[in-house]
Amino acid sequence: MAKIIAFANQKGGVGKTTSCVNLCAALRQKGRRMLLVDCDPQGNATSGMGVKKNRSPNIYDVMIHELPIENSIVQTPYGDVVPSEREFAAATVELIGRQEREKVLYHALQRLYTEYDYIFLDCPPSLELITVNALASADSVLIPMQCEYYALEGIADLISSIRMCSSRLNRRLRIEGILLTMYDARANLTVQVENELRRFMPEKVYQTVIPRSVRLSEAPSHGLPGIAYDRNNKGSKAYLTLAEEFLSRNEGRETWQ
Image (tube, rainbow, N blue to C red; front, side):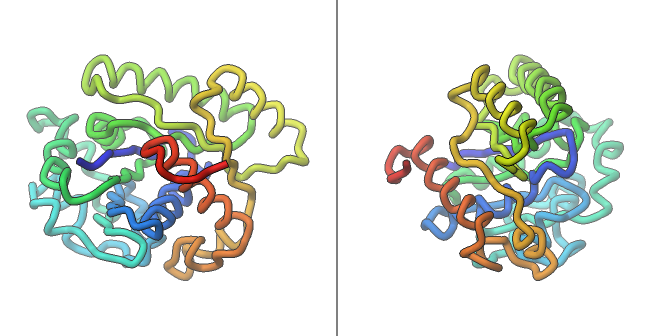
């Protein structure tokens, strides 16, 4: 049975999609059956996995036209992908009149539960209906965040939304973990924010942090996850370490320290 994890943060530019793509690729490299569902109309996770944007069929066809989700899957060396497209931005409006509109994605994903070990949902940087669909479908939420003051404020709002979704739509939903991205240990604010998070949520914050990396930023322009573009840069190494920590939390079979 697949574990479904939503990558969410209503604040953009925090490394959400980069983390979703690279952790997916790292886990695929470790032999896990991986599916990444791109729920963001920008389609950055789609291109980051080496799939052309605006390819059809895609997540829009699945959620709006009720296409069986398995018909939209594209296979890549880094994990399977359900691509997104720009037209998906209208999905929020088109779903308003749908019965159980918050659970359209949930019903679609039920067909895939036995086909994968992990299904990642890359959410848009907002708490609109598409994100609500992802939260209603997921077992847990992984929250990438930058070490800055506004990020602390934003994470409080996101956690509140997760709790509301858990109480009203999806009682199994919990926080998978908080991942610190664009990490710069030389900055005092970075260390202060990290200390605050680890003090208040010690079990949820990953020990692995993701440093700033030019090579990670370059990778999507080549249609590759960072760990495939340059495996030896510090950012890629961090995601490979994160994969070990992730598996140690979920499966308890990987050596991690």
